[in-house]
Length: 141
Ligand code: SF4
Ligand code: SF4
Image 1 (spheres, rainbow, N blue to C red):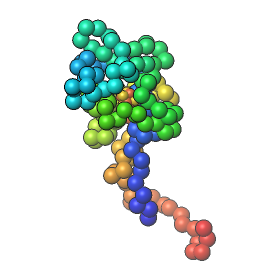
Image 2: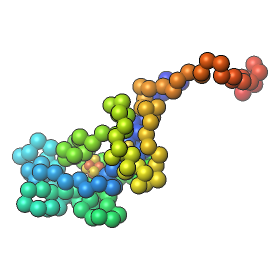
Image 3: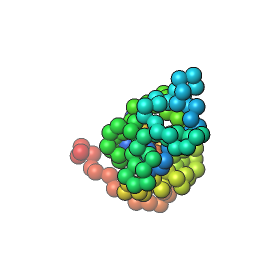
Image 4: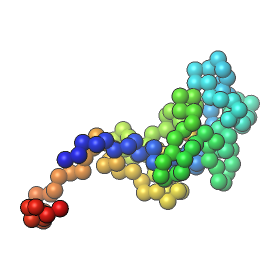
């Protein structure tokens, strides 16, 4: 049995970074703030909020900090400096519960919703009692 860990599902998704507006309190983009979101990658929303560049659009939005191809392999180029909403956003079943907003973003990009079996620590159930399985003869495969 292979003990290789599955990659984190978000590493081959990125759908939420290219669906929702990522707005946050303006202070988070100041150099004195805790996260120090790079200001040049943000735009003003109003007098109190900024948002990640690229997510201010209603259509075809994509955060400027997202690299890679959605649904295949992605990463956040400012991971250590991402703003609060990115830190708080939960993937479906990351904490054992379905997250409709994750499902919604994935659906928008043609991706199936995550299930609890997409997470490394959760294994599919063993073969059900009474289920017939066929094994190849010894020495084959
Ligand atoms: S949509 Fe869900 S699975 Fe995809 S990156 Fe966002 S939180 Fe992760
Ligand atoms: S800052 Fe990073 S985590 Fe947040 S939306 Fe942009 S790419 Fe995604």
